[in-house]
Image (cartoon, rainbow, N blue to C red; front, top):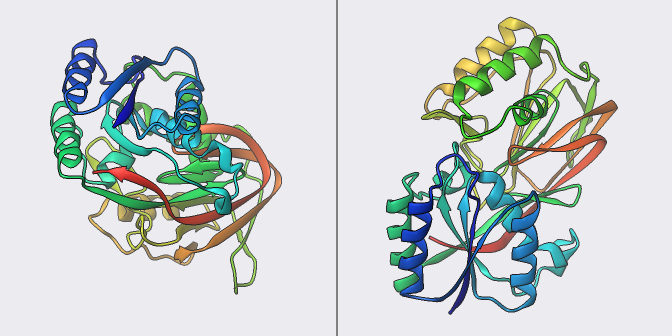
Length: 308
């Protein structure tokens, strides 16, 4: 088996020692090349080349951003068309970020040494699973995407992101983005199959549950969502403080079933279209993509093989 290990040395919890242990362990089972990324988009370029060269496995060692780049590189030649997904390398993940949402949703340990052991065991026993992905405006996402408040938070955190990214930083960014939204609060119109259009002020789209983590606390928006179902939608038509406090409290409760008169929530959707009255921030897997006035989200079942 030919494999490439893609390491983001700038990720929150990656270290040179951890990288060397992982590389040495993998090299005992596969023919391995190691690439350290040194610019945004580098992991995507490496994964795209790996797919074109017929590599069997690409292992991402970094945070959710690194995983997202690798996934988008592996599927780059599909050109955003689910029907064009051909034979692509399998994905392995050894977490090295702060949240590691995708890995944790798959049951992969947040500890890189334990995750390395899990990966080696899965390779030795030829164990893998197929996972569904989300596709939004040509961008593949593994666990979440959104327009509005959450994307505003992601954009604010990105300006200060570094080795010290913490749950506190995200909380402060959420509060500031709530009281001072950088682009205001343009109205969103949400369209889903078989339903009348819905008006909202912010929208979260999930590909699995939890939606994210706040430190060690899981954030549950669509508990019925998984890698084997369609997309989850969580949208709020109002952002008054009582509404926000209520849903934040419910989101932090274990597997809470969110309820509220300002809430629009659906699980297992094949597609979602969101139109904004004015440009709003748009994020995928915790990275700000830019601003959009329309995004179509699609669920793509069995899009990728993950060694786990």
